[in-house]
Length: 163
Image 1 (cartoon, rainbow, N blue to C red):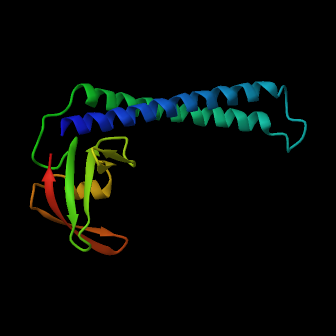
Image 2 (cartoon, helix red, strand yellow):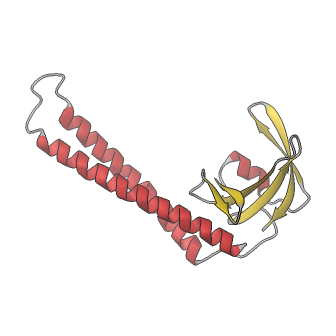
Image 3 (tube, one colour):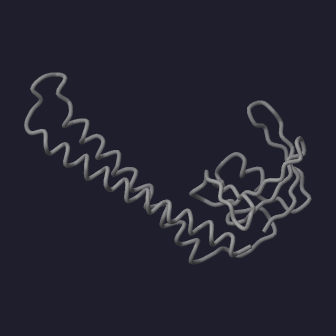
């Protein structure tokens, strides 16, 4: 299972690097755009310089967050936590939806959630440990049942495995 976790972490890290490159390009373009509009506004509609400056600031804030996320994931990649049999950070929790019988695997990480990866023919969705869905799996072990309220509907899940 460690190979699966490492593979997914590597995929997320590569995606983050691409996002960082794109944000850096966007920031540079915004800075150049703001420089191309010299002097004060000629009318109240002439806001191109300000808009480009705000956009550059937004890209800068995004870069801070992306680099922080990348640092956390690189640390986890190079220093994996101790393997546990309870649902926690850096565990893959396999569940069965007791309402429809679907079997789903979730990889719990502190950051970088939201995407699904196919590894060795299985789909694994990454979710942040801070997400409400992940909260339900923290501390669970195989054969536990959990209930989660989603949009005023109660969903019931059985924990098949934690690795």
